Image (cartoon, rainbow, N blue to C red; front, side, top):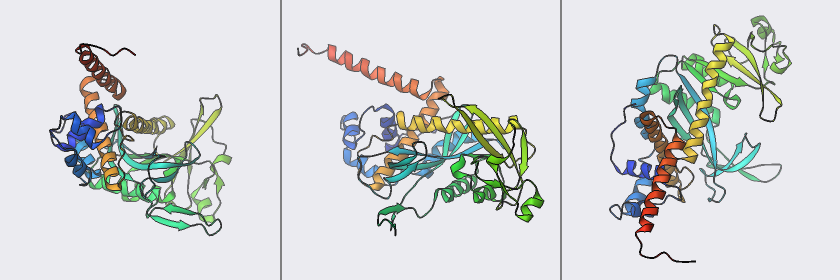
Amino acid sequence: MKAEVKNGLEDLYADYLMVSTGPCTATGLSKLSTGKISHDRITRLLNSDRFNSKEVWQRVKPFIREIENSSGCLVIDDSIQEKPYTDESALICWHFDHTKKRSVKGVNFISASYCYEGGSLPVVVEFVRKPIIVTDKKTGKTKRKGEKNKNGLHRELLRIARDNGVNFGYVLNDIWFSSSENMMYVKNDIRANFVMAIKGNRKVALSHEDKLQGNYVKIGALELEPCSILQVWFEQVDFPVSLTRQVFKNEDGSQGILYLVCSGLNLTYEQITAIYQKRWKVEEYHKSVKSNASFAKSPTKVEITQLGHFYASIIAYVKYEVLKFRHGSNHFAIKTILYMNALKAAYEQLKQYDTIPVF
């Protein structure tokens, strides 16, 4: 990977997020620079909208151009960072977390990430905003609603990635983005294939004739053997797809079933599952940006500065990817090295004092 050379204040803030282990503030970065950069400059930076999805793309573009190919995989997935003590707004609000089966208060971001053998690079990132407040007629309770739903954002991210000239052949996503409209958009508008996880209660027709006659059955009711492929039709999709089933063991020892649908009719079971396996690289991205890039460690209160910090954190993640390729270490190992070197420097500084207080 060739790094894009930038030495502005944006890079300084992103580097600060990489090395920090505590709260990230404008005052903290100003002190780190020994006062050479005032906290007001940093505050103005976060208020300037210079950190955004376009800036993320400019950072990853040189790397994507090196690794992209017509068989590449673009993964659409979202993640939630809880922010329980931050004031509620259109950005920081309640979102349903399907991993916890309940709503949590925090920030929800959706990424289109180019996943490859070495890792995952976000090429488009958008944050879910819910500026509309509606009242439930039955309960009288109010809740927030977005102007666009997540499936709409799914298609918007794909459009932007294609407009930016990202070369990919497959779109991957989990069951939460497997709507018929998304399938149609990927195949007919983006001109790519997809591998999507699908719920067992979705209905399909077993032949084109059944589709025309309206004869549909639930996927979970099909006698579909593991490692086999069945061609099926969705009601609102104008082309057939390949359906397959994976059987696996959960961490608790129970049996799990994963249904996959693929628009590439010539692919084998092994090819379909191998392609979908690349989707899990995006989980490494979500974990690292939260753990190593200070994603949740800004006490900012205003939405534009919160967004600036979040985007800067994603740029910090990209910088970690560059270091990973240069030195062969993963993000957590790099963070540990930075932390240990900071401890050593602090210890050497401590030894320079004439006396050490006794407690």
